[in-house]
Image (cartoon, rainbow, N blue to C red; front, side):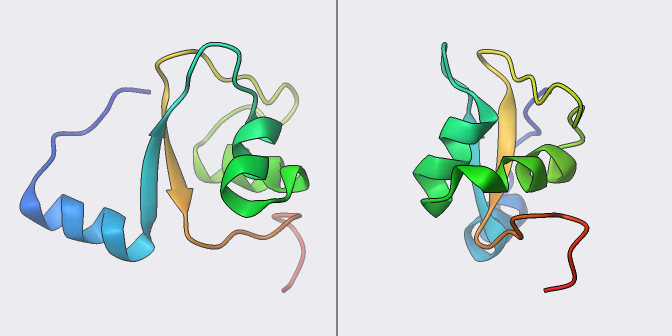
Length: 79
């Protein structure tokens, strides 16, 4: 995932809707979900939002993920 150019409008959107996170060596989606939402089970929602493979949930060091302010535990659930 390549980072998009930062513009004032893009920065306002990120601040209003969430943030970006650069994956560090050893990170997993579960760990990232636990860090931002105190609930690692929300990793599938992060995978879906970032167009990642739900079967593996793989992320690589240096990937840039969008982290929304709120996320559902199960992306298919109606909350």
